[in-house]
Image 1 (cartoon, rainbow, N blue to C red):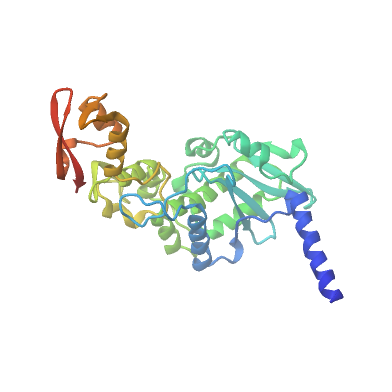
Image 2: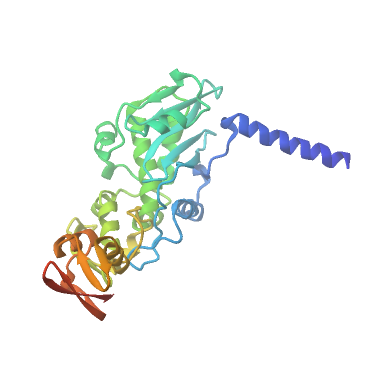
Length: 345
């Protein structure tokens, strides 16, 4: 009995220490880069999707995970990356858009923590992330912003920088605890962003990395195109009608040639996670919600404070005439008769 009491006391004491000292708080996910396999790497990406998605949110009648709506807490996803020399960096991703905010390492022979932030990181991130780095001098602003263009000015063309666990491990070893080298750090950021954030967003990028897992993969034109088209593709899928995307998306394939996407099925295989772009309400429910707001019914007489065109735009409907209706009902809008009913596509 006494042993159990002591054991319980230790557990409580450790819990209190974690609360009082945020530096003891565990990261959400971790990957041992030095010993990573295709299975452990894919699992981290799957875990990231599961951590970030809203399982109830669906776009375009697909089963592609969709990021949850922004919330007050927790705002960030922390991922530990451990390299072969024993150093571990912790990378912080925004749970709103999966953008990297910065990373944490140790220096001074592992005695002190050091936090590094992009200049354009969220102000909240700079204030609240990585409380382990208590001294202001150890909370460092990087010499470049988080856009690919800015990072590549320091790191070089990302299409020529191989993506793989071996290059990632090597760069972590070069950066962890070492004096700042802007080019090396920028190269590390390019790998972290693409191998974690982009590979979480896109199954295609994950698959290409897995194909050459034992060596490295140089991003092809399709990868580069996807990396700059996440929101565009998400919006295309979300606004699709019966699997058709209008207007069609003009992307680039792996050979650098135009890739025209007019159907959701064309992009489903390449997607891993969609960006949050509002609720998944169908056009039908959107339309009736707008009707509730703009129509006023008194004793069977319907009055409208909006023109047909204004109503169409507010409802987010591309063209009213594309709809087939049943349970039809005629109403008057400023002298013009239109048909209201349940949309069928």
